[in-house]
Each structure stands twice: as structure tokens, then as C-alpha cells.
Length: 173
Image 1: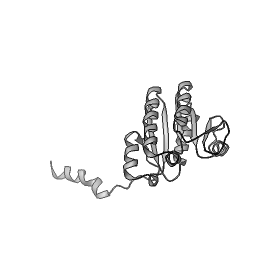
Image 2: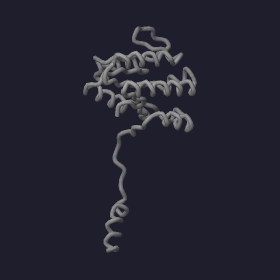
Image 3: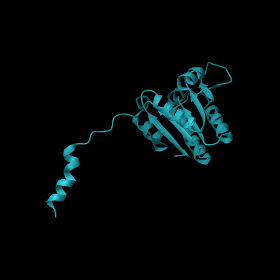
Image 4: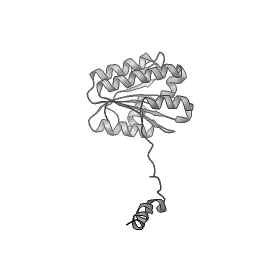
């Protein structure tokens, strides 16, 4: 759904990258900010025509965004959303941003990005390893987003529970 920010929990960001790639290959204009070198991301996920910015304090190429102050990230995303159409942004590196700032500053960034995404009717995807945040921090971040559960097998339904309504309806004419 457009205009929303999605948190994608998981140990690795691969599910978020797959969602992002799917949206971009079906017509969305994409921007990826990541901790991985842009060339690696482009090759690994087939994003040769999608801008990829590297979150880095050290690298100094034009495709780099410094993590601090977080306004650097906000400005890069805001500029893209202003010129993009049916935009989707993947922000892979929330843990890195927190490491170079503090959680409350990054939560404020998340608030701002959430509003920008809503106004521009865009989509923001944020992969996160829940183990890297405390329970309180994860809850605060979750309040600003919708959660996309990781892929996996469907939960098993207890056969006895599934049959219970049918058994009850036979007993009550």
C-alpha cells in the first residue's frame, strides 16, 4: 500500500531486497540506501538501472551518504521523492545509522521519513534485525510502521481445532 513505511524484520535484508526488486521491476521508481557497496547490490539483485547510495563514513564517492548527521539521509530521500513517481525507497542500514547517532535521533528521522512517504504516496522499506534493538526501541519503531513478516511456511493448524465448529454445529440443531 502506498504512503506507508514498512519494517521488515529478519537476520538478513534479503527479503526486503526481493520486495524492492519486485516493485522496481513492475514500474516503481526506486532508490536504495544500503551498507553494501552499490556495485555489489546492483549485481546481486539486478538493479543496474536503480540508484544505489552507500551509507558510509569512509567512502567519498558521489554515490555515498554519510550516516551522521541523519539529515544527510533525509535529504537524499526527500530529493528522490520530490522528483520520483510511484517511488519506493529501501533503507538498509538502520542499525548502522543508530550506531553513528543515537536511537532517539534515528526515531525522529523515521518520523520525518514516514511523513514524507505519506505525503508523496511512496513506499519506504526498512529491513531490521530485531535482535539489534531492545524491546522498547523495536516497539517505538514498530508504531511508526507496518510490519511485513518474513517468508516461511504457513503456521500449522491443529486439526482438532479446525474441526471444532463443524462438530459443534452437528450437536446444536
